Amino acid sequence: MHERADRLASTFVTVDEDLAREFEVRLVESSTLAFRVAFSVLRQREDAEDVAQEAFAKAYRSFRQLRDRERFRAWLVRMTFRMAIDRQRANRRRFVREQAIEIARETTGDTVVEQERAEQLWRAIDALPEKLRLTIVLAGIQGHDIREVATLLDVPDGTVKSRLFLARKQLKERLSWMNR
Amino acid sequence: MDEQVNDAPLDREIESLLATEPSPEFLARVRTRVAGEPDPRRWSAPWMWAIAAGAVTAVVVGMIAWPARQPVVPSTEPTQTRVEAVEPAVLPVVPQLPLVRSQPVTPATRVIASAPARDRRIDIDLPEVVIADNELKTFAALVTSIRQSRFDVAVPAAPNPDTPLEIKELPPVEPLEIEPIVRVAALQAEGERP
Image (cartoon, rainbow over all chains, first blue to last red; front, side):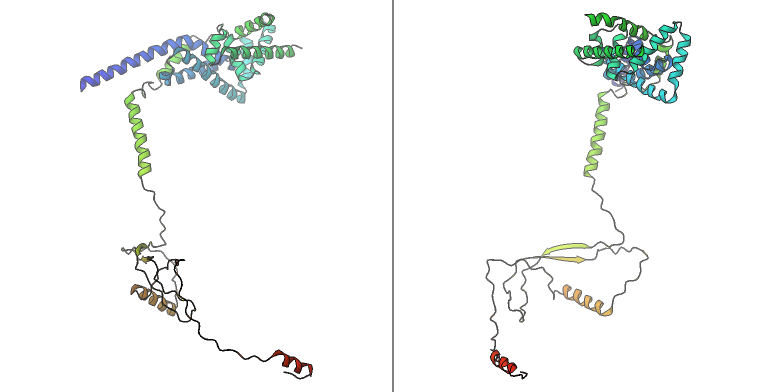
């Protein structure tokens, strides 16, 4: 009886250790991805880190179903983006976002023209529909190619291509309109 | 091709915007946060799922098997209804009626209402019900006659359409004498009252 219990306990410990080890691998390889997805929405480091951290905590809770690497990253990207959007809406109510942009402008060493251009681009990205926005952000993170973006979004390659085409077109239109 | 060439600067701009690194403490903070989370293996063991499924099944079966409770109305005393088969009854022949049905009635059911065995008294302050003495006596007589089977309250069954009805002969009718109308009209013409 005791032997069986010990065996069962040791099995759990082994499974537990395996899970922890796998999660640590996922955490290291996906932490920057989650942070950047959150940052693309929030554009404030602290908020982006908070959201990414919370997304990892949720991922840990469901890690048994997310042990596959691709599945984990796709889930993490979607969850982080959704949570970041929610946080952004909450921030807008508190008028924190505008302050954050001001702080970022003061602390970075970019020229005024570059800052202005970056701000315009962020605004144009913000104005995109969510699907196009996430697609162009993922394509811009760490040089993801179309196949990687398609895997992360769980959509066909053709869908990513058409979304990228539409996103770029809308971005260029908005940027040209801003520069008039 | 031209589109791709034109898109390249835009893509580079976006990449540079997103090339922000998290703080060095970020990973450590996530690890600390995850350490405070419940163990993901908690609901992983198959026997735990089996226990959960068994508990859910037991609850569902219990809900189905549990008898539905009827609403209790305290002011009305419940009556026990007993249904029993009774022998075929013959309706009494009423001489005044021209049509008399004398064939036996098919077995019917008699519904007898009786008070419950246990006398459950409920103390509720209700106003006294006043019943006239004659109504009380009449009702008591009716109940007594029913109990002594002197009065059959059985509901007669519908008559069989195939059975011919017995029709009693009508009493003879004596002819009436009526004065002719012509004479009255002649008297009226002469100015006399009939």
